Length: 178
Image: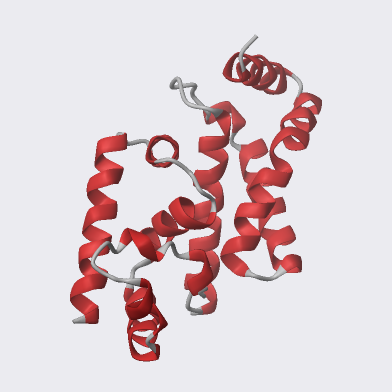
């Protein structure tokens, strides 16, 4: 039985009897927590938001529709929304760590360029200008090492659409740095 088939069975059982939701929680809690923690860099806050994600998932399980996507894509989407809500509510900026950004994706930069403090400062400034959606895409690609296909599943779009969005994000960053 595939992972998706197992999830479908667990979801159908949880819709009929909520005690089965605990199996979905056990399966995905660590993955979602790690994602949230990477976004927030605060363990206690990440625990709270992860719990909120699973409460929302449990309360809205009857609205979940299987669309040949892993259940985790739906959970990531809830997590992204919860993280964005937190930042909006508390008027905080997301924190980017340069170590988490794969600089070789900016193909016209050499390693020596990246060591130049001014260029690093420009990159940090440019990253802060990105909206939450663009920051989430970068985080998933570079922090979580998700493929464009996996990101597309989470955002309910195609792999090609994610490639285009990532290209546009890189272009924005390059323009802001020049």
